[in-house]
Length: 91
Image (cartoon, rainbow, N blue to C red):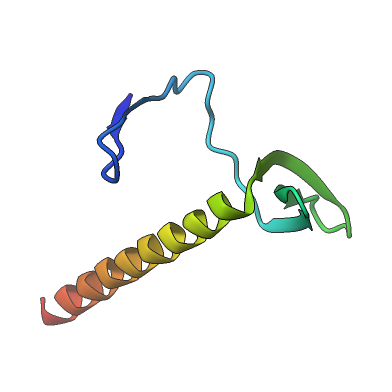
């Protein structure tokens, strides 16, 4: 699967066999002078335990850019959902 990064025109290749989408329902964030680490985890059934499924580290500068882009994408997604709801109500 190929995707194009709209920000800088970079082509991104994804091997769907070796790059699964991992579900997370909890994020632990650790900050130190060098940067930020995000531990994405899943709650284990009805226990008080969680299993880390992915760890991502980045500089503080990159984290700020990520947060801005993530917020922008959420606004787009919310706008699309609201547009779909309005369309469904009129049909």
